[in-house]
Structures are given as C-alpha cells and as structure tokens.
Image (cartoon, rainbow, N blue to C red; front, side):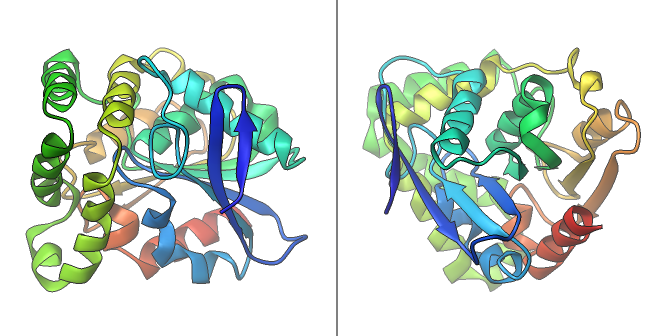
Length: 262
C-alpha cells in the first residue's frame, strides 16, 4: 500500500474511487485499521474519492516512541492532505477518529468542508478507565491485545449483531488483536488526554453526529452534548453499539452520503 513519509516514519493510506470526485477522509477507531470502513467503500465511492489511512500506532503505519496526542494525530492528517495536494476534504471519523475530527474542525477548519463525527464524545472516559488499560497493555503485550479483543466484542457490537454476524465481528476484532501494544497504549493516552468540552462550541463547519443507541462507550448523551452546542448540527441515531458503521452498514453509509451531498 502507498504511504506518506512523515518526519518519524510512514503513514499508510489507501485511496479508492474515481479521481476528480470530492475527497472523503475516513479515520479509524482505537484498535482498528483502515479496513474497519470496508463496508462503506462501495457506497461511498459512488460519490467520493475515499481516502483511508491507518492512524499512527495502528495497522501498517508507524509506531513511534512515547505517548501520542490527538493533536499529533490531527497533524498527521494534515501532513497526509499536504502530501497528496488536497486543499479541502470531507472528513468522517469514528471514536478516536471522531476526536481527531474535532481537533481538525477546531484547529484547521479551512481544510474541511463538512464533518461527520461518529460514536465519539468531546471527552471519552477518564484516567480511571485508561490508565489501568495502558498499564496492562505495556506489561502484557500481545497477550493483553488478545484479552482486549475478546472484551471488545461486547463494547463494539450489540449481542444480537455479534451472534448473527460472526464473520463481520471477527474481521474487526481481529484488527485489535493485531494492533501494536505500544501503538495502542500510546493512543489510549491520546484519547485519555483529549478534552474538547470547552472548545467544541467554536466549530462552525456543517456537522453530523452519528450515535449508536446501545453504545455504552460514547453514549447518545455524549453526542447530544456536541450537537446542542453547535448551530445547525445534525444528529442521527442507529440501533447499534460502538461501531455503528459496521453494525448499521448500509443505513450508516446512506446517512453520511445524504449529509455530505445535500
């Protein structure tokens, strides 16, 4: 796959669709890679050239030393856009990708046309959630990733979807098991430290918030917190847990397309 050469390593990306169409950037969740969006590509490429990438510490992208920040991840996106000579794009990010979307919308709004934030919050969890997980992953390495993989099924999907769509679930949680422990822990710290609750009202871009009614990680109330602070922001909810793009599938894709093209 192609990669953009950053100062400290390579950022892996994939570009699908017809050249000349508007570009839509997709940003993955913590513990997944660019393939978490596979179910959307057929529908999205009817309207957009789709740019997916593996966030630093994930997939085939660089795993750099130290803890990361959402600002650092956001600047990686800007470096990707610059390398591909993309002045302005649509952006859709889920969970950690939604935090990156918030950072971009606050700090680099001129690079975005419209923003879709999915299953995310202005602040996700707290130190009591993240610090024990970081400690476990750094201590136990690959074994911890397997343990997290098993626990993630209940967080990421509703019980009925997990039972009915085993292959889809296994494909996604397999990404978590394959994620670099160092990269995962570093991004856990990035999510832990991100807090946009005071800045979110400064976003002026058209914004769609996508929530899962059964999402216990980033709840519909977290989504409403963002929407209520932004004039004209839209909200859509699906019967889904944390990975609504996988669970809601075609309904998710159509809602994003409707928002980005109207």
